[in-house]
Length: 423
Image (cartoon, rainbow, N blue to C red; front, top):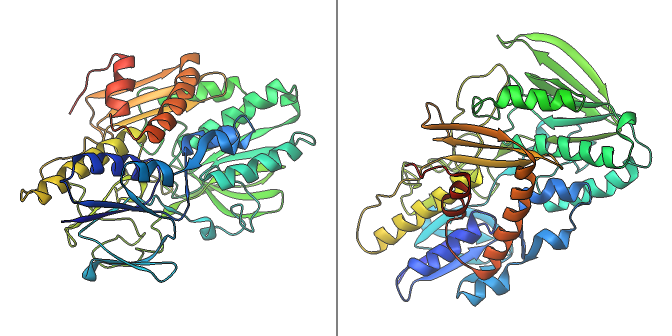
């Protein structure tokens, strides 16, 4: 009988574990290995940062829910993958053998690539993890008592721009509700070539709609931006032209800043030849399978996907929830096929869907497929997006606690929007 090990217990790893357990043969074993005892719903972190959510609202212990479904759980974390031996070395020295490995760790946050960036010894905040969001929340409480300029955005090499836009607009909404918006100049700094690029080359009229939303809320922006360093209360930014040449330098004062970092692969896999690219992301074929180590699959933010297009300042490609869900289903079907002596045949659709909350409204987009040219290129704005994201948060957390495996995006979200399923 086979042992399937899943590295990661996030929005990719948890659903994958449930679906794998449901579809594998009797006697096969599934084990999830995570660095934490808890699952947290990462898309809600911008709300946590301004105290619209507590940690308890979006986090719960993973172990009892996984074990209830006969899924093993280890919260020690993986120190190193040894693919030649089909073995994992854990942080406590324990060794775990596998027949199939699915890497769903998410990324390592590369704060160290820019001097002064990040919450760990730096001067900027983050909403990439609930721990960071809680630290952001603590500082936000101090900030609103003594407000000043805000700098928010995403640095060069970042690939997840949605939370930066969300947090900018959520902060702006919170400041208006507190009647102190007039005391807070806001600047959005991004490596994107234009507002609304999103690492996707734009979706529908994302450029026009997001620029309009920022103008309406008096948020200034700097695109094609490289953050060179951050000091206490000051960010140094070099703006580039469309040819990538330096155009202008900025010294931006701030009393509060949240900047999303670039991502890279986690230490457990970084530098393993044939498994990862130079940034440490997992190399996969069309079946989510590593070309060299064919019993290793990968899903989510940790997979290697090239940029959609060349940009003056490096911009990565995002992996949205819809895309991850598709990767999960393809991976499960392919491993089950191999267990039954058949070759893998399922391919992820790699469609993109995003709900980005603005606090009192929001934007939604669908890009099918994510990389142009597309069959569907849809973008919309309205108060319904805020309500939809609240509903989605509650639904997804409930789904993870129940251990159900129905695909959320294809069966719920797109049906609600009236968009036909496309392969």
